[in-house]
Length: 363
Ligand SMILES: Nc1nc2c(ncn2[C@@H]2O[C@H](COP(=O)(O)OP(=O)(O)OP(=O)(O)O)[C@@H](O)[C@H]2O)c(=O)[nH]1
Ligand SMILES: [Mg+2]
Ligand SMILES: [Zn+2]
Image (cartoon, rainbow, N blue to C red; front, side, top):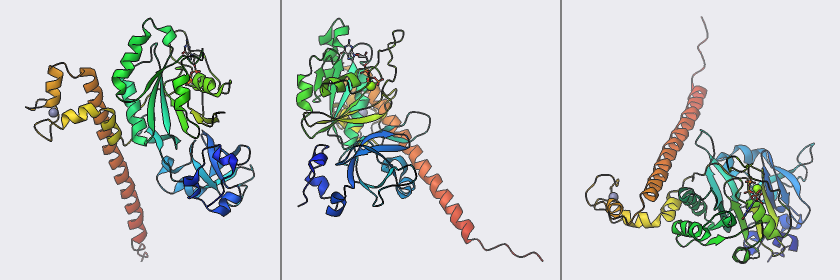
């Protein structure tokens, strides 16, 4: 049994994590947690103050790109050589196997994943009641969170700015199913009790959502101080200013660990068949009762979904949101497959050129 330093358990390290490292690594202070992720490097903290670190080249180039690189929330083991190069940055030797991840399809034209955070127990999907509340977007967030294996909860902010807060809460609850929905005003620090209770000691909790919805304000309210920078929402379009620019882990006095993230403009799940099925379990159950197992829910006879739409039992917008997510996942799958095939072809080409007989000498 390895003795766990208090400074590490304060960051969420437990016996299960300890079983993945050696006592030598632990004793040498080489085990630490990533508390901030930026482009190019990470900030890590162990039984010592935060320091910069970057991955070993091996980690950077081997494997499947971004998904293997350390991200905020990760537990990592540092390389034996304490200092990487001239800049004095530490070097990450390996990332401990993750308990959960938060991955979305990266914004932009290419079909690539973006790893947002790792080892989350709870993800607070923050949405503001004024303007941002969008059932389809909430469904997408739920699919993303569930795919990665963390538990979701929804936090509805700015209820003080809408005429009918109860209606806004109902709209969120209609999407949430058995996912808890908390209404709170983090700016006034009211309505926080349930959220505080959900952020139990030792848990790692991330806040995600659009810019300006109050994620950093919520983190500050939970931390009891002004740890995170917050920004007023632009008056003209109600959109946030993208005040938070990096993902950062904050330790609460209660013993919970909170991760604030920058606002996201788009949210699309990555490799999310299961997550989509869970977020739309009601539709999935219905689809299982269609007459044909291959039903595309278009004009097939005996389609349970069409039946539910006709009877008004199923909301057409929810149905459309589900179909859109499924077709996005299909496209993603196809592009991923095409990308992998191209890579394989390139490898093969390189290999065959290598094996080709040397050019014949000129006569
Ligand atoms: N009226 C009201 N304002 C709020 C509430 N919660 C947050 N705000 C305000 O909303 C603005 C944006 O809050 P932030 O916490 O910076 O938002 P954010 O989600 O962190 O935004 P990004 O960092 O850009 O992603 C701030 O001016 C907050 O004071 C609320 O419940 N009611
Ligand atoms: Mg913020
Ligand atoms: Zn059908």
